[in-house]
Image (cartoon, rainbow, N blue to C red; front, top):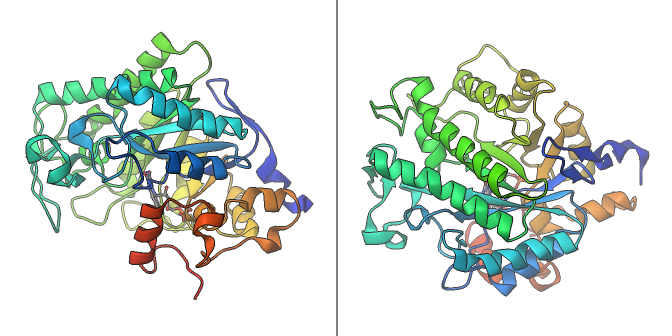
Length: 372
Ligand SMILES: Cc1cc2nc3c(=O)[nH]c(=O)nc-3n(C[C@H](O)[C@H](O)[C@H](O)COP(=O)(O)O)c2cc1C
């Protein structure tokens, strides 16, 4: 290995006691490839297996915690014990390759297509319709409490299936994010109104999941939290709101915070007088308190080392591991110049990309860099 990359390959021990062999994480990516009954498919198991031999930790695409949270056609579930065998195959396939396996769990809230949820009833913190698309109705307090328990039940299933941890998907505009956002949360009860009240649902989910882990896990089991810094709407989550969220999360004894951005170097829109990147500000705010994972448009080994040198504990690779599943091994073997940074047209079977994901990539030009 070129010695300039050694920092990427230092092991790290997380608060739960889980040790990662290196600082490179596979970012959570839905594949739209579950079986028709939303169990994990063979195609998915093969896709994850192909990408799990070099990274320290794999975070799976998001698994819904209850039927009203199903946001993706072909996005697998975790809302019933019948899902455990498929989840177990997924966890085993990842762990057999030497990586830690983390199940991302979520509820889609207002981003769920009506045809995927019971009675076509789309639910959210409040009835704020999507900019283009469907409306939703506000959840009752009883329903909110039930969804909090569902996050706990999915965690129990992840433990039984042999995962090393769960990541709570509080990012990208799904239900946890919807509760934190003043754009989508217009409630005036204990779950909305002030910044503190907008934090109630995310924190209740964290507390429930930590409780389930304490009760059920017989060996170290990690809990991570993913969030998006800021949103464009006004009112909407500002960078100042994000730093308040980070302060509370940092006190919750989590294993890591995962900052969801499309570009690692993106800078705040508003809410602070600061020109540094959002991830650098978040890292400074938490200090040594909790490890931070940064992600977004890291394609080359030099991109990765530059990112980790900002002080984040780990970096995650998403699209890049679809494009080149051997990214980590190539860097480890001093072959970083051979990394593919554009998806080759003939790569589907060689790189084991499930057909539905391949077709989606082809239908959305510009989403994933493609060879001409
Ligand atoms: C195909 C695809 C599926 C994704 N699915 C998820 C998901 O299930 N959960 C999530 O938190 N982010 C998801 N993301 C976002 C990625 O985790 C990542 O944050 C984003 O792609 C930016 O990182 P990158 O430039 O390394 O790809 C997805 C991204 C892609 C490309």
